[in-house]
Length: 170
View 1 (cartoon, rainbow, N blue to C red):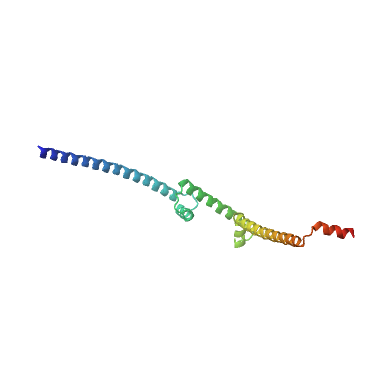
View 2 (tube, helix red, strand yellow):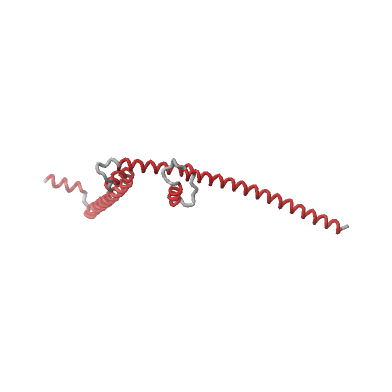
């Protein structure tokens, strides 16, 4: 009788293990199918974006450049499209400005003139840093002169106005 109970327990345990395994397998399959469908949707969206003729540049090129500066961050597809469109607008604007040249050939001077609005902010930042640095040096020089002036009068022990009054009275 004890042997029969042992066998039944072993059979029950094996049945439970099989059921748990089947449930785990079913859950794993469902998760894999969800992941596959999500990946398929992402790939479909990426492929649609890459093949989109309305965008001015190949999406892969734009995404590669963005990823270089945003390492280990995910980039929304809306951001990718907006970046591509923005870059297209910049290129159109620069090309239109370069097209205003009076010569038959577009030269580097035309390019620099056309890109000036986009590089001007960077130049202003450099100029600001230069001016602030110069003002800081002037401030340090003035503070040094003030300290030197105060030190000279402190050593003499003379009130600076009393000297002026004596010389004016004579």
